[in-house]
Image (cartoon, rainbow over all chains, first blue to last red; front, side, top):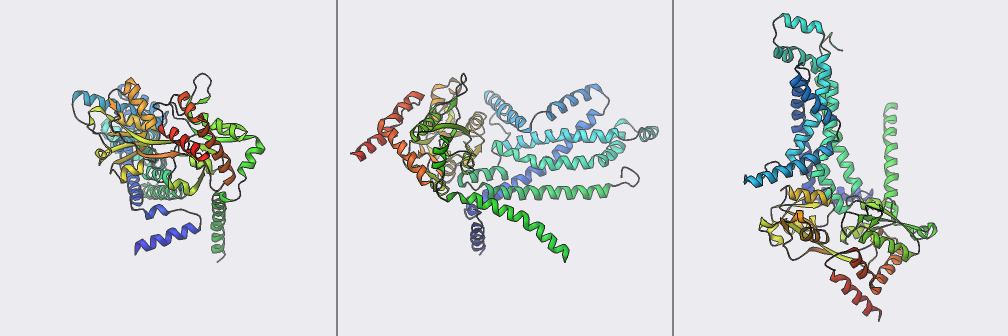
Length: 249
Length: 283
C-alpha cells in the first residue's frame, strides 16, 4: 500500500526531471531517514551542551579574577578565530589518533570516543564561545545601580551572578543566543566530514552512487529549514515569555 | 481574493525558475556539439583526480600535475589533435564538474558501473582495471573479506566499494572526505580496515615505514572494474574519437610504457591482456 504510493510518487517526480528513486531502495531510504534522526540528535545534544559551555565561560570571563578570566579569554580567542572544520579535523584525526595510540600502548583497550562524540564536543565548544560573548554583553549591560542594590542586600558573588546578572543577561542576550543556535543547527553538517551519519553524510553517500545531487540537496535544505524555523519559533516564544515590562523592550 | 492571487503569483515565479534550471540539467542529451567545440577552440578541458602517488600528484618543483591520470589526459588531447587543459577534480564532485560543463572529459580513477553508465557517456574501451584492497593492522586477524562483517570499515565518500562492502560483506561502511582522511581514521582506530584502490593501498603498506604496523592481507581484490574515460551522456562523436585514441594506446603498447614510467608497481596484467585482445581483433 505505502510501497505503491512511494512508487507513484517517485514516478510523478521523475516526470518533473527529479530522480528520487533512492527511496525505493530499502537500505538507502533507511539510511537517509536515520540521517534525519542523527542530525536531530546532534542538535538536541549540542544546543544544551553549547549553552552550558557558554554560561561557564561567561561566568569565568566576568568573574574579575585574572586566573579565571585570562585562560577563558585565550580559549575564546583561539576557538572563535579558527574554522570549525579545522578544529574538528584536529580533534578527531590528530587528538583522537594520539589518544587511541596511547590507550593501546597502555593496554587499556579501545578508544571510547566515537566520531559522534567528537562532533558534539567540538560544536558545543565552538558555539559555546559565541554564547559566552553574547552573555558577557548581557552581563555587562546590567546597570551598576542594580548590582549595588543587590550587594547592599548582602548577595554573595555567586548569588549576584545567578540571581541578578544571569537572569537579566539572558533576556538581553536572547536574540543573539537564538541567532547562534540557528547557526549551530546548520553547523552540525560538518559531522559529514568525519563519517558521522547525519543527513548530509547519508546524502553524500547516496548521491556519489546515484548522482542525484539536486534532489537530495532540496531535501537537506528542507530539513535544515524546518529545524531552524522551529528553533526561531521557540526563540520568539521565549522572548515573549521572559519579557519584563520596563527592562530592555 | 486579490491577496490570494498575488500570493500564488509570487509562488509561481520561483517555481518557473526551478523548472527552467531542471530543463537545463536534463537537456544534456541533445546533438553532440562538444567535439565540434573542442576542435574549434583547439583545446579540450579534462578533469583529473590527483590524490598523491603514481596515479596523480603535483610536482613540488614545477607545480605541474604529473602521474598516470594527467599523463593520460595529455595523451588524449594529443590524440584528438588539440591542447590539453587539465582541471583538478574531487571524488565527491567530479560528476558535477562534467555535467555542469566545467570539463569535457573525466580521467579521474572512475570505474565503470551501471549507475554511472545510465547518466554519463564513456569510451567503451577501458584503459585500466582497478579493484579495492584493504589495509588493516597486522594484529587484527583479518584474512578475507568476510572477516569484515559487522565491523567498521573506512572508505572515501564516492567510493564504489561502499556498496559491495555493506551489501555483500555486511561491513559498517564509514565514508570520509578523502582517502587520506580515511587512512588517518584507520590509524586512529575508528575502523578496522580502510578499503581503497589497490594501487593506493599496496605501495603504502609495502613501502612506507610509517605503515609498518599495517598490511594488506586479503589476496583477492574487491569489485575489480574497468576504468574508462567519461563524457556527458549521448555525445557519440566525442566518445568515438576518444575510444579510437584509447584503442591506439593499447595497440601501440603506450599504456604499458606509461605505467612503468610513472612508477605503478606491480604492473597490471590487464594492460597486457587488453593489448593481446586488440591485436588479435585487428588481424
